[in-house]
Length: 83
Image 1 (cartoon, rainbow, N blue to C red):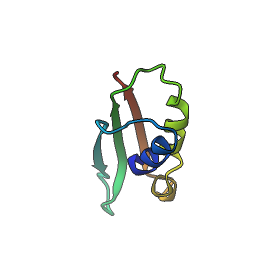
Image 2: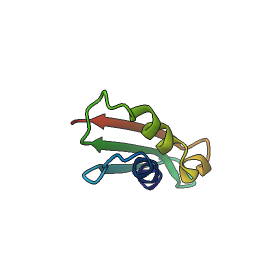
Image 3: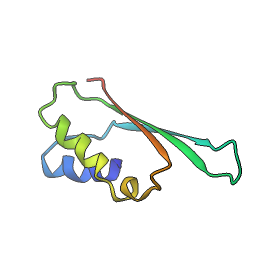
């Protein structure tokens, strides 16, 4: 997701260089063992009113890997704009 955001950011002259991502997986408690939930938190050192905010968040959510995950995997995605 960050790779796709980076491609879009570069195209629009936005510096995401200090952006971090934390991913936490939660496994199912019932067999078969599988990933039940992913928590993804982006910390973006740009202001929350950045003019490209919606574009960058949409780019992340349009990531092919994100879209390829099984629909049963809960994806909790948060963008923290801290600039």
